[in-house]
Image (cartoon, rainbow, N blue to C red; front, side, top):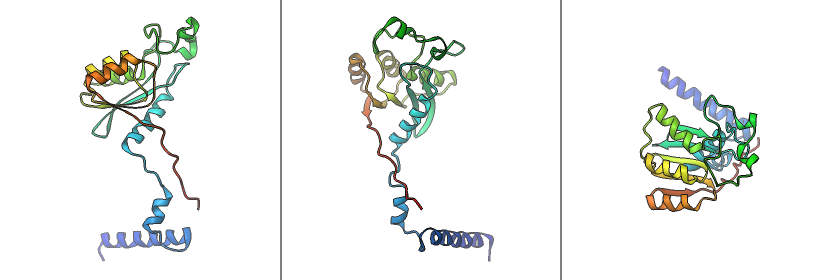
Length: 193
C-alpha cells in the first residue's frame, strides 16, 4: 500500500470509530447539520468581528467597531477612542458627558475618533486601498464618517444598530452607496453529547 492510501484508510477508520463513540452509529449528514444548525453568512461573520473590535473602544458612552472588507478579506479595523498617544476618556473622563452634549450632536466636541474614521485612517496609514470595499459597523455612520466613506469610495455599508443622524442617511442615499441593516443573528444550536 502506498502512503496516501494508508493515511486515507486510517482516517476513515478513525472517523467511523469516533462516530460510534458518539451515538453508536456513523454520523449521517443530517446529524452533522444538527451539530451547528446556523453557519453565519459573510455579513454576519464580519459583523460579529465588529463587535470584537468594539471591545477595544475607550469611549465611555458607546462602544463601536468597524471592519473594512474587500473580496471577503479584512483590510482594516477601527474602534472609537482618543487618537494614538493621547489619554483615553476611560482615564480622564468624557468631555461630552461633562458638557451635557447629547449623542449625535456637536461631533467636534469630542476627544475621540469614530470607529469608521479609525478604520479608514488605518488603511491609509498602512497603504491599503479601500476603494470598492464594504464597511461593516456596529452602528450606522454619522454625517462626518459618511462624508469620509463617500470620498473613500466605499461601495457598501452593513450595520446593526441605528444612529440619530438624518443628514447622514440622506447623503449616503444620494451617493448611491448600498446600505444594509442586519438584525441580530439567531443563537447557534449545538448538540450535547
